[in-house]
Image (cartoon, rainbow, N blue to C red; front, side, top):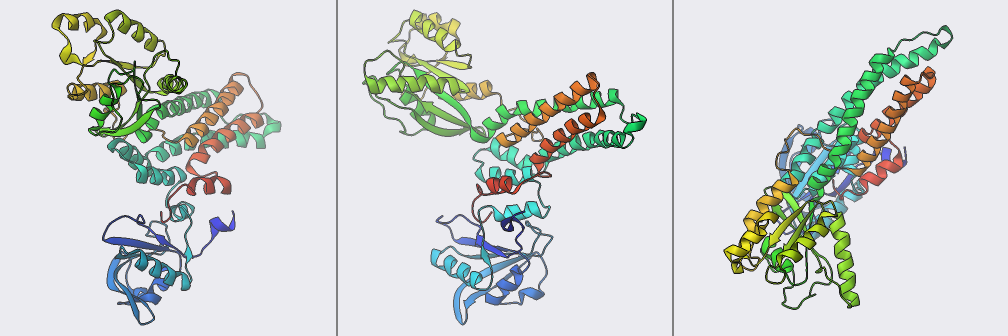
Length: 458
């Protein structure tokens, strides 16, 4: 392990977000000397004589100069986030004060923490496994009830516990296969191949289910990508503004106003939706507009759901049916919207009934709530349970896919009898790939890549 990863230095960083308007900032120290270093600049009770999980009022001083009145929270290892001695200094949220205090602590022997180093230490010291540590970053970044729920579930070990059970079952048979290698000359079989096959098939199904959960889990984490498409000047930008309840996109009666995609997010019942307003789809000689139309088609292919908007005044029913047929060819779920519904007669509405559209008036906000309900129904995320285990990390998916490949080889080896040493090798590979998810198998490069994406102070 590199020096950066096994360092026992006491580290310090601002734990709260810099530059945020607020009354309080928290400066965090972690390491064997954290309490002693803090005590050198703190005037109040002697921190070295205080119990863990206590808070103390006093001042931070540079010699006789008072820098600020503070509250100091003590957490003695291993009963702390990092499993080391941790001190958190709550001070007034002044950039000047924060810099003065951190510089004082650096002079007393602390070192500036690197990105994610507090959570890295929690992992290295056994407080979290690697997938739980990654969930900490997801929890900080969560911006909807659904993404918060899944990050919290993973941080509390739901995903880890499932992987731990899979590995334990596989390790049992792996040990029996390894034992056979010690008696290879006697042709002894300790691991029942039929039972091993049943176990591997069971694990294979669970791994497959976890891989399949990524599509939904990724949506929960990053939001549901929805493209608003249609011909020029049918009201796409007006619809986006109505959904966001603000003037986000430029609205004009001139066809082709939107030349590029416009994106924004809204939260509907705890689910994050990423709406993409696109250039109108039509044949055009305008080079810039043509590029916008090309991007629209690409965005539609990448969307989880398409909102296709029609203007019944601009297009007759036959033209609408042709456009719907083109959208269906993409194989992506879509919602049909008829805009300017207030201008439609009852007879005209009957014509559109077979298309099962939602009638709206984007300008007046009519039908927007009905549209939101339909979006929730379409993505089918509102029925997720708190204990559902989902994969949201592409690194985890890749490891699970490699695990499946190794399990395929194990099943092949069982059905086409091969020697125990090759079977043991394939089982070890499956265990290795599972281990890379939780961190029982790691490299310095992997850890540095993961934790460098964390914010400083976490």
